[in-house]
Image 1 (spheres, one colour):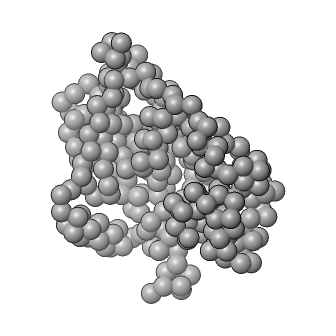
Image 2: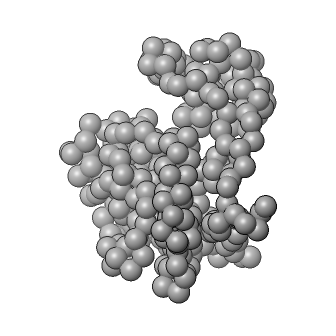
Image 3: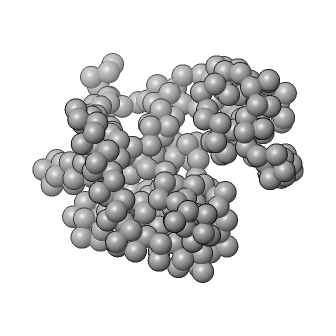
Amino acid sequence: MTNTLPPAIFLMGPTASGKTGVAVELAQTMPVELISVDSALVYRDMNIGTAKPDAATLARAPHHLIDIIDPIDAYSAAAFRHDALRLMHDITQRGRIPLLVGGTMLYFKALREGLSTLPQADPEVRAGLDAEIARHGIQHLHRQLALVDAETAMRLKPADTQRIQRAMEIYRITGQPMSALIGQQERAELPYRILSIALIPGDRAQLHSRIAIRFKAMLELGLVEELRALRAKYPLHPNLPSMRCVGYRQAWQFIEGEIT
């Protein structure tokens, strides 16, 4: 059965591991179409801080799921799974091979394993949580989460505002811990023969050095100026998922005078 399934390639790896370069080279020699698996590249106008492939690169190797929403919008693992499955089907129908490339492992996991049936966001519950965070801080909410869902609280960093808030929202909507609901999910097998390729640098110190060099280059290219332009164009605030991306979060703090 497995051998009769159409192929798909998963190309994974951490930031600055060289995934895009490998994907572009593969696109020149194989009948593949690229699907971006990156939670930051989905945003329009966020180019420098996301290390978005430049126009010349995208001309050589077009990527699906880049520049599909505005920075004020949200994009979830569920939305990615829906879009990726649709694209993979279309690519396969064209007689080509889907090549999924990126570093957002949550998206790869959602695609491979399916998603639990978690409730949609509730604006009223979320507004209440926003008020609690503003009043007491995210660490307080993390402690509250530990009382009702210790398993989820243990795996989240005390400053992870987005995920702590979501876990607490789920508990308040359903009365059940998120960890229990996730445990009930049904495994959904992908109808593809998956070839997984992971670019894992052997020298972690060298990788960290490359990340630091990349961030310095972003600053020199105008990351802060890009964020100023984004703030002028869109009604942004620091708690948006787009503005919590590494780089933009620090640039926001710099503009606000919170860091030097």
